[in-house]
Length: 205
Image 1 (tube, rainbow, N blue to C red):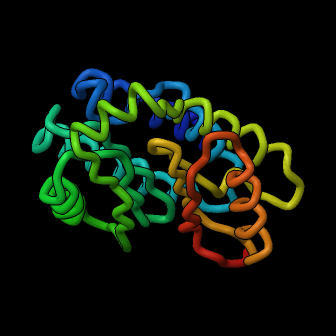
Image 2 (image 1 turned 180 degrees about the vertical axis):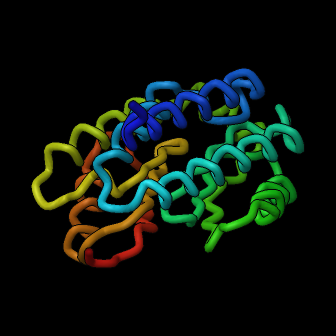
C-alpha cells in the first residue's frame, strides 16, 4: 500500500538517482545522506505532502538546469528549497556566474522568492585558502545538525543549513523570533564558523 511517507521517501530517492547520474561532483551538492536525511525530515514537518512535493520538483528542476548550463565551470553550487522559496549557496569564480545561476533558477516555475547567497571566490583565494586556512564545511554542517537537534526550542525539521568556507547560511521557517535567534546563536558557537546569516522566515503555526 502506498503511504504518504513511502511516496515522499521514494520521491527523494528518485531525485537522488537523477542528480547522481547527471551531475559532476564538483559542481552540485551530491551528498546522498544529506538528501535522504532531508526526505526523512520532511515527513515530520508541519506542512502538507503536496507542499513538500512542490519543493522536491523545484529542486530537481533547478539541479538539472544548473548542471546543463553551468557544468564544471563553477566551484560548487547547492540549492535548498522550502515552501517554494529557494536558497542558492556555493562558490563561483565570477560575478557573471552568480548572476547566471540566479537567472537560470528564475526560469523554474512555482518559485516564490530566491535568496542568492553564492560567494564569489577568486581562484588564487581558493588555492590560498585550501593551503593556509582550510575549513571543513562538512564537519560544520554535521555539528550544526547535531546541536540543533539537541537544542530545546528549535524545530530543526523546518530548517536547512549550508556552510561555504565557514560562512553558514540558515534557511527555512522559524516559529518565532526567539527560535530564529537561538538557532543563529547555536551555529555561531561552532568552531571555524566565520559568519552566520539566518534567512529563515518567521511564521507561527
